[in-house]
Structures are given as C-alpha cells and as structure tokens.
Length: 396
Image 1 (cartoon, rainbow, N blue to C red):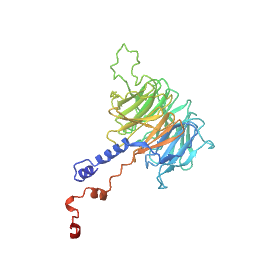
Image 2 (image 1 turned 90 degrees about the vertical axis):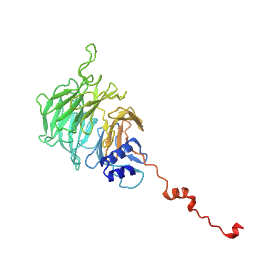
Image 3 (image 1 turned 60 degrees about the horizontal axis):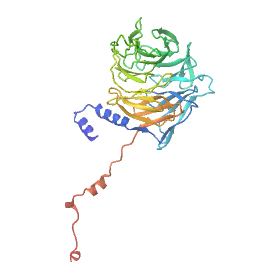
Image 4 (image 1 turned 120 degrees about the horizontal axis):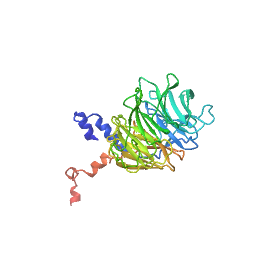
C-alpha cells in the first residue's frame, strides 16, 4: 500500500493503479456478510436485482410473486450488525401490482425518480419512484422475458424488450408507443442488452441458439450474428451454422467498456465475444452450470485489474476472471438456485437473489489488524539502549 502511495506521489505510477489494485483485492476477499441482512419481502423466488448507478445506494428487487421492493443499502444506524430495510414496495395489495412473476427491474440510468419493470403478465411498466404509481404501461402479445434501457443514450429513449415472440420490440418513452421491431430470431427472446459504449448498438439472445448485434439506425437492423466457430465450422458437422451456443441462450452482459460481450447458454458454456467484429475469443471457462429456462442475470465487476464475472451456478455464485477464464472461487450461502446477482462498484459489494426468497450481501473481508507499534517496539528494542545500571549493594 505504501509503495503504491509513494510511486503515485512522485509521478511514477498512473493515479488509477492504486484504486484498481485495492478494488481487485477487495473482490478477491468477497465473503458472506454475517453482520448485514437484507429484509425479506418476497414470498417466493427473487428473479432480478438492480442498483441505481447515480449514488449506488438504492436497490430494486423483483420476485416470482409479482412484488417489487426498493431497499436502502446505507447503514444509518452506525451499528456493526444491521438490516437493509425496504423503504417501500409494490405489494400484492397495490392496485397496479404485476399479476405474475417479475422478470426484470431496472432503474432509469440518470436519476432515481423512475424505474421500470417487466413481467410474465405481458406488460412493461414505467414507475414514478416518489408516488409508486405507473406513469406508463406497455402491453405485449406474449410473455415478457427481459427489457433494458441504454445507460449512455442521449439521442433516444428506447427500451428494448424481449418477449415470447421472435421479434424484438423497441418502446419509445417519449411517444409512449412501440416505435419499431427488429426481426431475425426464430424463437423467443430471452435476454437483451444495450452497449455501454455506443447508444445505437443492441445485443439480443434467443432460444434459437443465436445472439445478434443490431444497429437500430439501419434499415436491415442486424449487424452480426455471432458464430461460435468463427466461420470455420466443418460442413460435416451436425451443428447449425451461425449459432452462439448449442442450446438456448439466456444470458447477456457487456463488459463495462463495451468492447466485449459475455453470453451464457443452456449448453453449460459461457463465451466471450469481441463486440466490434463478433469474433469468439475462445476463452475457456469450463462447465458453467445453467439449468434456467428463462433469463439468467449475471454481472461483471468494474474498476478491477483483471475484471471478474459473477455467474449464478446452482445454489452458488461462480467468480471467473473475464479474459483468462480462470475460476477464482465459489460463493456459497443460498439454500436454493440463484437466479440473479448485481455488483456495487463503489464499495466492491455483491448482492444475489435466489429461489430461497433471500437476498444475500457479499462484502470484502476486513484487513487483518496490524500489530501495535508500541508492542512491536518493545519486542525489538536494541540491547544497547537497555538500562544496565545497578547499585553497588547489589553487586556486593
């Protein structure tokens, strides 16, 4: 630590190096926090979590019971042991509660005054956080599996929506209607994600084993269909051409710089793609257990070196390095299948939701206390400075 500070002070190091090193150390020390609980609101599984990007203080959760809860993660009690309380919730008695399972919740990217939710009840709702009333509701013909708003868009207010139909719907918050659709998939759309680098680039994953990248400004729409074989598949192979996985693709996540895309499928594989040319980087993560029949929400760290990806893995969460594929650790604490997790980059904390109805907080372990300087000085005192005086009587 002192070496980093000294190198930074004299200008030998990039100012961000100390921060990256400390963030990496904290992620590698993640453990279940026994002193912090998250109030249990949901009566059935927790499907989705999202932490607002402005302060990193408020968290949304959506459950299979149709309930949406809003939590304050700040510890105002100043006590070691505390519970993150739910500030408010859209419960079963709320007149506008979702009828069926909530699959995705997301904060408005620029402030906490609005959030969105989508559900198996075939609706996407735009909520006013202050009144907890829907400001707008979009209706669809099929079950809604996933939706996403661009974190960087300045020239559009589009929400991409994946439904049971093969068409990707784009809903415009300004006009309050579905502006247009993207056609190309053959089965339901299980995951959608906007690029954090380019506001017009969208990634979609489908049960047809394909992942597509779209430029929504283009008439044809589709830029690239990702191919796990990078175009070198043998003609004798029985696998379909231009498939990202050999099963349903139900998870998508861009790296924070938008240069790479991670996908996960029911073939128990996770793949890393170059988002600019669609190339499979061939990073081997080994078997990544995925038995979910709907969307799987995983997350990537921010500000670390290297970066890490947190993936629900049965009743645990697997932590891999993004670019080398090394399995770092398994975070265990849930009693049932984990369906979602979200990373809080300000303090390098992780929150996970499971079918056991619980939300768990994973925080970096505290540093071991250093030995007291005074005690250390006593034990290492130079004999030359010890008091060697004695009286003449004692000598006699």
